[in-house]
Length: 612
Ligand SMILES: NC(=O)c1ccc[n+]([C@@H]2O[C@H](COP(=O)([O-])OP(=O)(O)OC[C@H]3O[C@@H](n4cnc5c(N)ncnc54)[C@H](O)[C@@H]3O)[C@@H](O)[C@H]2O)c1
Ligand SMILES: O=C(O)C[C@H](O)C(=O)O
Ligand SMILES: [Mg+2]
Image 1 (cartoon, rainbow, N blue to C red):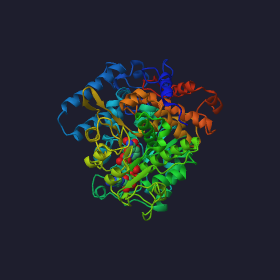
Image 2 (tube, rainbow, N blue to C red):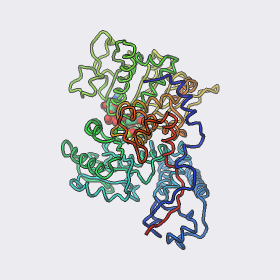
Image 3 (cartoon, helix red, strand yellow):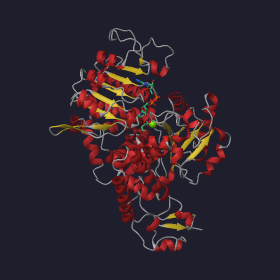
Image 4 (tube, rainbow, N blue to C red):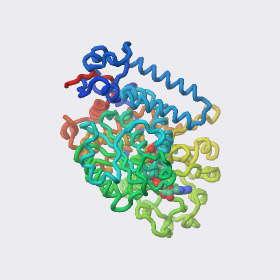
């Protein structure tokens, strides 16, 4: 499956050689948008509101005359006005604690989001590198922790245990006839912050903002959802501001029955909708994935999106050593974290090693050492989760002597001398100085440390730690954004962001535009391969594993096209809107990229027409 990535990466860049984000609808006068509203109802609807940019013609025909200041501002003037107020906020809060500044930035963006979505997404898309850390990790974690106090206006839908039996009807309360993309969480494992109950809805909102910004999904066709089955978070249950169900979480069949009813209701109303499961605790992440993945067009981002991003980074770490990709099969990989993300990454990495070995007929060995909160996992572990058992160390001839059940992280790193140390533990700082100094003795000339836990406070280490204790040749990646590190004498230590935002937008977009009946392993693999092929050898040698966040719209168009082509190749594609499977199948690679790019929404004001 992995073609020569260097050749492909120059192809990729050529396919997307434009500097501007892929155009949305063809660049002509935008088609009018028919609205059933007039007057204040339009001004109060963020999907249609243009504020001071309503032209006089629209003010007359929509009953807006006299409801706005007389001057008509252009979209550009509105944009500059907002950016100036955002920048002055940055200036006025300088020196305040980081969390205060972060929440102030989030609030000014959220107010715009609640008022004028077209302007909001223009601001977000054109400043994605600066603003992703505000609407997404790490700030979104703070927002979820403080949601009940921050709440001003509902966004999305709330399906709770009390709605059992009502979901088939309440789904019609959502005002949009068409929904393309849904992100749902039950709030049980929000980033590395644990059970946040109804407050977890901040995650689907942030993820869908990225679907709009990176994948060009129309913001009028997204739906954030929280399934509120209670919370086991005592602090929230005792908080008189808490806005969710005040009861312990449902468990077992009662829990599953609520999620089942939600999925049935969603697909009864929007059969083509793609559903992304996000931040479910491990047991439900795997159970819901198995239960629904062949019945609906759905995927679990923490299990499958993360796996693809991590695999792209792992292959980059092989290339950084100047070795052929096939040498991935002999890499030694230590993983701290055996939860939904850790097992997802291990499963996809093991699958890739098996694919590579099958080509050469070689026999493989267990290249993974996996730890959880009780240390190294071996076959001596009692009550081992079946998903984890595949990676438990045994007692065979390939085992490293004296590495016992429950061995500590530093013991494992000292004895294994791994090429890669990867963290998906949700525990900040566990890659401490002792562990990182042990990584200096790695068998790799370019030891790779991936501190992938979110938010920033949960990162297993910082890039400064790594380049200081492991050395300048190290490769670093993290789940939340960090700044690059200046190594002196003009050298830079690159702080890559190994976050599933590089893949989930393209996975969802490709599934949608192909009309895939479900999302297969090959479709996910194709997305991961595309991401890995995006980085040139020169960039890899510098220690760059992932694209700049500012190019996320370009890479998403490319990932989306790869997913479309994989769906077509597997005969899973049923087509989308006016494009059938045959037409999809007749497209060349570049035509598929153009098809995807053409269907990516871009924020411009459409003329509004009221047809009442
Ligand atoms: N970078 C990304 O794109 C990305 C994607 C998904 C998840 N994550 C992050 O990964 C973390 C874990 O997510 P999850 O869904 O797997 O959570 P989870 O709760 O399902 O699993 C956490 C795992 O870490 C283990 N663990 C806890 N303390 C440990 C320690 N001291 N040493 C080693 N292992 C330890 C736990 O036993 C468990 O196996 C979270 O912070 C999440 O935000 C990042
Ligand atoms: O939300 C993110 O930033 C990535 C990932 O889905 C996570 O749960 O940490
Ligand atoms: Mg997640």
